[in-house]
Image (cartoon, rainbow, N blue to C red; front, side, top):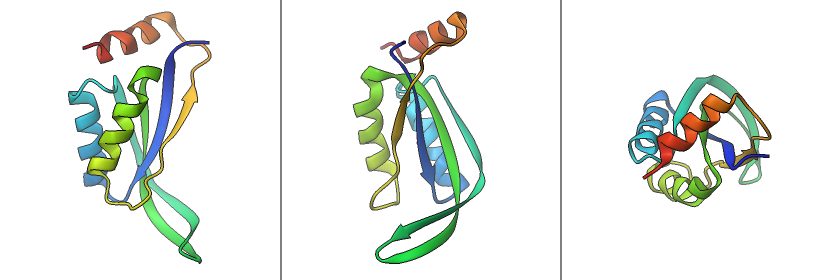
Length: 106
């Protein structure tokens, strides 16, 4: 197991996704953010089943950056309850994992 994390969030527009991704990388909280989409999302919200088009962000970072990433997403996100999930990276190409670590170092 490593200290590297793959985090997911969604955004309501490509522009919002780009803003969040750019801030995470420029603040050195993420080494890389991929933006996928649009994707179709179906979910419960305020007692209704909602259907929307969203953009998925794949955030590559480390365990220690989770809380600052969470704060940045809350600061920049348009949703009342933005998605943020973090998954442990069990293993990976050593050079890539080292690049993540170097990229988020202060």
